[in-house]
Length: 307
Length: 166
Image (cartoon, helix red, strand yellow):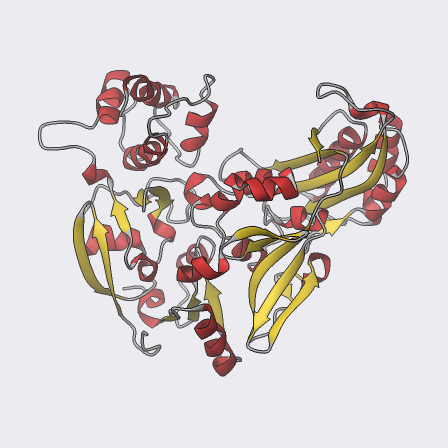
């Protein structure tokens, strides 16, 4: 029998309060949360790791897996699955990017187990939902027996698979502000070897408001308006998910046009430093990112979302 | 509450309609429990990394890859494997359709495909109205890799089940 199955310890609290009390008591002993297990189990068996300590929180979904509006905020419980997120009307109302990203994670068999909190806390630079949280100004809620605190998603990850989570804390929610009313143009694009089950070479969540004279028709090009509040958030382009601030700023107040797209695409390097790795090269990643930026900002690639 | 120093846990769940209770290391894969502890060899071990879909089973009606499910999370669940589909002397309608279309070939992915497809087809309930262009059918089984059939015959089999009812 592999060491991993015989030498690992698993603790399965039956309530959220019990889970937090256990972590507080055993902080520093290396207990890590086990939720849907889709990444943890893959890594354990691939690397034949044993002797680790896992806090099995999967059964706490009734407490930590709800997706619901609370006033002007959408709270997504960390144990909501990608399938929950994909089907959630509340999440779609917060931003369709959320549901599109959830649909792009693995395939149905993964989406039925993989959790929102796992995708974030796991900290893979290629996590498909991560650029979305950045693009929609999400906050991460961390809970311990000391209480709950919130961290802007942008400050949550501190380096490659490193985050601000303390040893006695669990990632319990993602909180998203109500969107601004108006007309938005957005794009979620995952570039991987195939549509299902791929691991991203580049993943982008992009969105911005379109300010136009009069109301635009569903089939109308957004190119008759100007950009406001553009977000270009990138995953798989470095150790942590990043926004392309310089390119975003260059679009502010400008008409959607190819000229703008080309200009902004050339500015990506100010913020992004992609790497060569097993999945792709820095040059390919940057070329794809430039193309996506150019086409998105010129209004050729994307979708309408009206609030 | 489980003693944290204990290397094994007792897990009770329903398997293909029958109650099962086993003693197992908590992180043992459902796939291994099915094949080695319970002798149900219909669920196939493919990549072991959640990529190929060959080990797909239904947990509480939802398709999942059993190579990534730790047995400790199965307590109280309802599990269905490919062995639940046919009755003695009578194939499941999806299996009939796969035989007719030539969608069953080497068999490596076949168990996983059937469970992914059944999970989707059963979720349609009475409202069997997937998109005409097969988009939904294809998405439902996109997590299963098949190297023989080219997929067309498998999708055709699903389409026949939709047309005829499961």
